[in-house]
Image: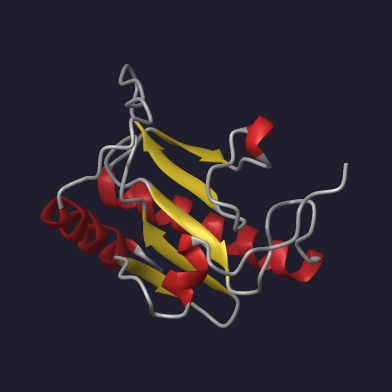
Length: 142
């Protein structure tokens, strides 16, 4: 499979350049973690590489390694922040695989026994709710 080339006009590239706002949770030299503005549950966040990568097919191995290290850090933080019973980690590739934004990103979603994920409806969460949840996560980071 030959994937199309990376398009630097995607929403995450714009967030990385500071052209669009985001509720930032964690940032290092290689990655950025932000709140998902259309969360499937409280504390749903995203981890993205700073290096341009459309998805798993074209990401450099070192960049992917850094993304996974940050994903683990965020998984631990969201479980602590929300008293979650577990965490769902999701990553989608190309349209057929469910990818909507074509910059590699990993979903980190705190999970609770007996509570299903909300459907991905495209409904944006209230900014105040995102800010409050972000504060909880930032306080729980090691």
